[in-house]
Image (cartoon, rainbow, N blue to C red; front, side, top):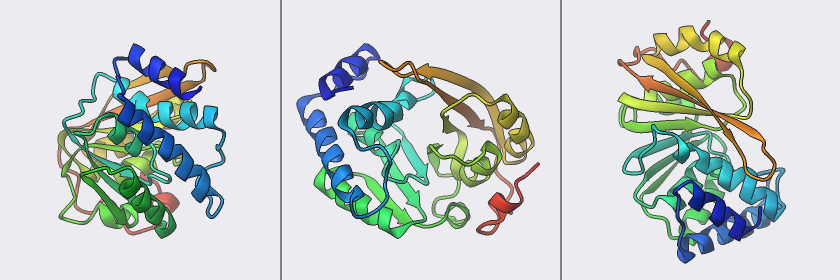
Length: 238
C-alpha cells in the first residue's frame, strides 16, 4: 500500500487526511526505519507493508462504532507506537497516554512525538501491572487498547483496571479465537468488564483479517488487580 493508496482507502472509511497528516505519516515511516537499525522496533520495514500492516491496521480501531475521537486513550505496551500514534495523527483531538516497559522504545517515541509535533501525548516507562495500580491513572481513560500477542485473559488484567466506568477496552488481534475469548470470560467479568462484540475487519489489497474485541467497563475493578509484575503472565485468571 503506497501512501496515496493509504489516503484513498482511509477516505472510503470516512477518515480524511490532509497534507500535513500525510507528511507526519511519511516522517513516522522514515524515523521507524532509521531507529530500527539501532534497536528492534519492527520486522516490517518496507514502505508498502508499514503503511498497510502498521498504519492502516492501527486505524481499523477508528472503524468501529464504539470509537469517537474526542476521548482519552491509553495504549498499553505500545512498542513502536501502534495503534496510538497513527490514531493521534489521524485524530489530533485524541488525548493519548502510552505505557511501555522498555525504556529504549519510550526514547524512540519521545523523539517521534517531538519530530511530528504531536500535542497531548504522555509517555510512561512502566509495566502495565504497576501503572494499573497508580491512583493517578487507574480507571481514568475512556479507551484502553493493546495490540499485543498476550492472551486476552492476561491483557484484560493489564488494561481493564485503567478503563473508566462505561469506557471500553479494545484488544486488537490478528485472528479470531473463540477459545481465547471463552478462556477470558472469568477474567473479564471479575475485572468489571462485559464482552460487547468481536468485529472482523479485512485489510485492503491483501484481504488479511483483523479482529477487534470490544469490552465495556461496567463496574470498578477490585483493588487487588492488576497483581504484581509478572504474576498475570505466570498465573492468568481462569
